[in-house]
Amino acid sequence: MSQDISIALDAMGGDHAPEMVVRGANIARQRFPKVHFLIFGDAAQVEPIVASMPLLAKVSSVHHAGQQVKADDKPSVVLRTGRDTSMRLAIDAVRDGRAAGVVSAGNTGALMAMAKVVLRTLPGIDRPAIASFFPTLRGESVMLDLGANVQCDADNLVQFAVMGNAFARTVLGVMEPSVGILNVGSEDIKGHEYLRDAHAMLRSANLPGRFHGFIEGDDIAKGTVDVIVADGFTGNVALKTLEGTVKLYAEFMKQAFRSSVLSRMAILLARPALKTLRARADPRRYNGAIFLGLNGVAVKSHGGTDSFGFANAIGVAVDMAQHGALDKIKDDVARLTIPEPAGPVAASL
Image 1: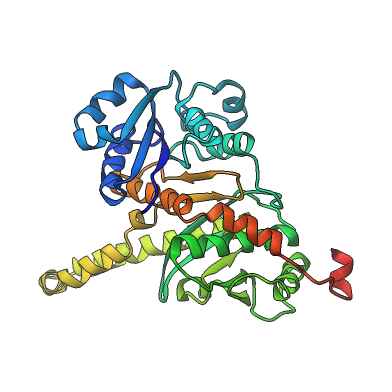
Image 2: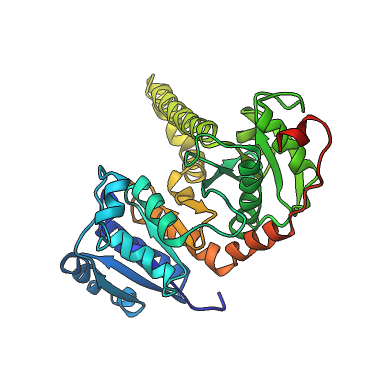
């Protein structure tokens, strides 16, 4: 890294806050030595933890917050009454230019609501989307939206494609990303009308990389494309299905290795391979969902993660800020030209 940046942390968000957050910052400090941390939370709890890590203390500042957002708080209530919460103050730091991004493991709905109100959306973006990345047979892919927008139109999906494309170039390091729309079939005639409209629009759009077309559910794990575009309902169901399948097969493997004495002996021989597999599929490595489309970097960490997972969420925020993801999105939206199609698609636009 050639540039010093600051990242705001919501120290009170998450199941194991604030210690998990502070220890995560200490891990991230080793990877990003030029990053400064603005840590917002209950100073009486946070300051002793930071003080116990002298190297972190040198690159951090603790800012007291008199309130915290609870896991079951309603976003509408938090918006009205949560101005002194650690989450809100961390978001305000991004708005005011004191931080390049915010990371929180707190209430997802509250974080999205406050970030959208405080940071606003980027020019040309109608709705922010939740994006995350995960391992595939070919490497890593990003998928969006994962639940922020249950109902979408063709324009929303095109904007998601633009944002996902920029994320793939910024965080995943894919210079020419391939983009696909998740659908019930790969043929151009399949799916709802808004999906076909978005397909036609992206086919003629001048985005960096390549538009692959429609993809199906089994293409997600294959890594057929680098960017998977879906409405929030479809994307959330697909993601939860993937997570559940991983847990199912992990349990099947445990049961298989415990089924007999020979199986228990075999696990000793397979231990190195299993260790590699566990590291490759470790969800903590892919922790950090991004609220793309906002005029500021906002990253949501899983609430139940540990310090290692939170450090990776910080890493996503740093990569987004350091490599100019927001500028890429703005530039791509400004350059986006979609010729007026003929026929039914034109009428739907």
